[in-house]
Length: 422
Ligand SMILES: C[S@@+](CC[C@H](N)C(=O)[O-])C[C@H]1O[C@@H](n2cnc3c(N)ncnc32)[C@H](O)[C@@H]1O
Image 1 (cartoon, rainbow, N blue to C red):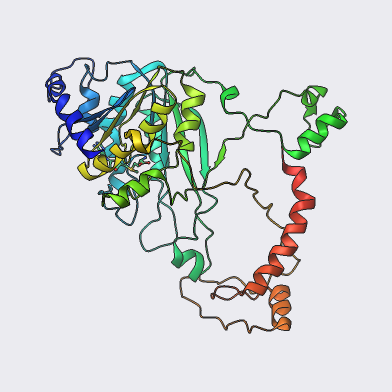
Image 2 (image 1 turned 60 degrees about the horizontal axis):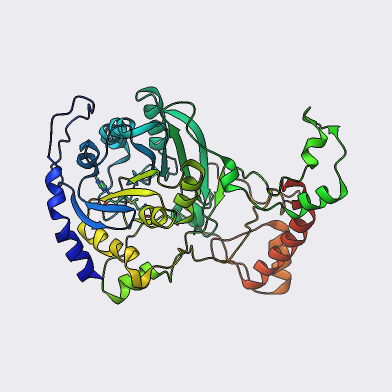
């Protein structure tokens, strides 16, 4: 596979000549980058797309590769402004918006009028304190106010398998909850990007199917909404909400196996294939052009290839590109998987474990001082005491207590969840 990739690279080396670094371009008013990043070189050509290794900003300025107004979808997950620096060199949260500016302009110029820019962006914590950075909201506001993007819709990607983090605030001091969603900004150049939710429909829930079978009595809801009988038409599937439940638990994919077998570096922050697939299906037609300027392991390219979209991916780091090439090797091409066979994820309604008892008073200092609490003793009476008083400790809970909580929550969820299915 590597051999094939190298020969393909050589074969297309001449194509690099069409890339003229810093060429004058009146249409693309992209400010020159201060950093001297490597010029993109063509690393691989697949049936429908190409991977370039190097700086995507320079690539986007090349009108021969990315003609202005030609891109139907920019689907990307830029380096996040994370507190803990990732190995590929994240920009600090404060500088993030400034760093993004030239990309914003280049994205705008390259998009078709009815094209979309979809940015998956994780939140960040302020170093040393349990509060959040606003950088991803600042980015959104900048893109809309200064670069005239429209916020077509915001989505939230919920990773149901996310571990509790940051540990200090979530599992040690217990003063914050799990940070398990990424924001996804769906932006467009005009208020009318091409899109159809009919491409991303979901099966009806059991309660909706029951309702369709038994009929729905039109009535005025307590909210004042007049629910007409139209809601009982069977359209074959339901319109999804703007929250996407996708676990990021890939552990045995062809990509990872290839990396491990060939001693190649796997990208440490891949998004699940279902994410770009969702937006590609909803926002593009076959043969449309999709670009991922921060391609990492080229998940976007792999999905676009499978869905017969034309695509261009750019990734700065050679080692990520080298392992990404495995996604396009004939011998490992399989449908992408997100490492989970789950069809549905249920979100518990808040309150399922509330029993009218507040438990311990809240820490008056907001958890500033770490508290050390006594351990729960592992006996049945201690379990029930622990359950009723909610005297949770910092230690992981025992299997028995977990089972009690799970059982009471499960039965309540099963009886009450139905109200919230649609
Ligand atoms: C969050 S990762 C993307 C991961 C990708 N979505 C995946 O699933 O594999 C962001 C990537 O952007 C790359 N990057 C940062 N600046 C870049 C630039 N100027 N040009 C091209 N790639 C860049 C980083 O090296 C990193 O691999």
